[in-house]
Image (cartoon, rainbow, N blue to C red):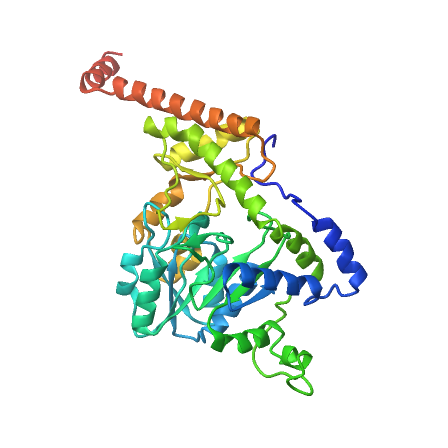
Length: 404
């Protein structure tokens, strides 16, 4: 593709830090750079404890264990999200309960959450879509009222804020992603944000194969052993070294992404004014990290045709989630088409555009022109089609066909 959807990048000292990690002689994990990343995130975002993980999937799996999920329990979450969240719930025998999303932010509809709570509900897992926060005050209020845990899926929300508070720092737990498609990257990587002090000790144990090895390293026990469930949720020091180079550049990367986002938004305003598409929405109390730029077009056929058109121009745009409730696993759980109408509508109409650190103004302009060309032509074709199918035209066609 001439203009790819995503392109990994180096913003600072990432490669130098990798070489430095090798000289330190500890590549297995929890070395100098893993500690530096954790400390930076804790101090910058006001988080009690940040534990780096090999992926956001790993962090979600740890969060599920810390929520004490068991067979028969239920977790409320949106269907419009990546499969890792649902998998983390299902693998412990619990049941995801899918709630529809808002049509403006595409986040979980907080007005529908309380009605989904049953005696079996253990947790609420809001997903901050595209770096725009869910209504966390209301969600935390509902959780406190019903004694539920809140796990923020902030995979797309690193360095985004809700009413001045960092995403990932508000719920009892939060999960970050540093996958190469995110704002701050290390190839594959993630973090578990632990905001409830009572969960810190157990989180360390789960992360380190169910052992109290971290307590041993701190001199709190004379030897370490197996004390709880757990797995190998410690990232490679190589990944942490690369990530630290990115996290040092939190602000410059954020500024650059805002520039890219605003350039798209400015160029697409005319198409929105013409009624050809809908641009992303951000509430005033949300500070975005500008994770992505998406468009909402009128219908599935338009979206799919636009994807093909962009591909023919060497531009790699993509759709996003297939709703989890309409997947084979969702159907197996008893969900049906039509259960979550906003989710189903958005899923069929959303298109994500190329968005990466080094994208140029010329590349963005090429994307905008290709989108505009297709949508305007599509409207003209639609207008001609309506004109040809007036009642008079239909009568003439019928008469003509009979005579022929």
